[in-house]
Length: 304
Image 1 (cartoon, rainbow, N blue to C red):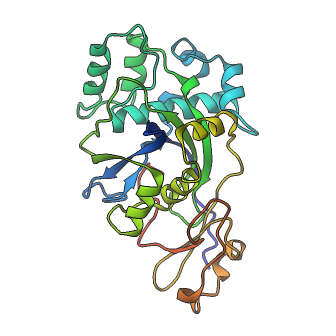
Image 2: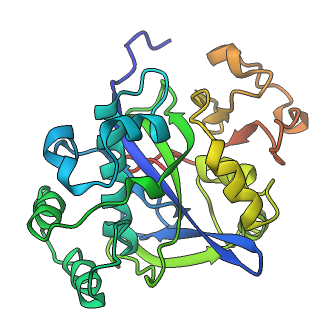
Image 3: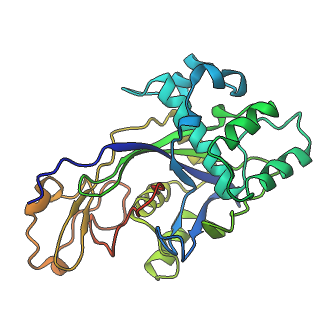
């Protein structure tokens, strides 16, 4: 048995973009490049790690629409400080722009050409890590932290080579903007209802990562955009979702926290696995034990 301590957790953000469609709602998923070296060909939400440039409560204060107290009230939680709220939120907004071409910012007094320009600029090759911070501050944008809401908190399994402490934010698609994949890491974007995305995943036409499957399943419990918006107003981060990765001769298995075998760690009895199914978690229409091909969270900085 491996006695080495698990790798340290890296902070990361993921963004669930939603839009109203025929009173129901759709979510935006991006397909990873087949040559990306990470989650090749899988559909995911925009997201990635928190960079050092995303930090700095005082320096970012003039460029966000919430003061520290309001940030903590809307997006904070137990052990989640104002500094953490700020950095995770900035990372969420930056990644949404970089990967989906959508800027979550106040745009009432900005020209459409300003949005077009920053969306095009993020496609430049070899941009420095600081590009987003420099551009937002130089052009005096105000990022809309007030548009963000908490959805879930994920922690990567201990046996993974890279581990992430990830906050899943949810936000309504900004008016007047269009999602445009970066055509480097992502080559295709699609709007689907959660139910349709899950159906296509089962049909093997829309491959999804495990956290995406769980997130879409939770969202599928809400039948209208209005109902979802009501839930979002009072939603908190909740308890962290900490799956367990179990080695097996046929490849690793993921145990979700609601699975009866979740606390068994590496001592899970693998015999007769194909005949075993676990009770569904509340609002989860699938199985807790899932065979996984390869590394379900990938090998680089993304965490969806």
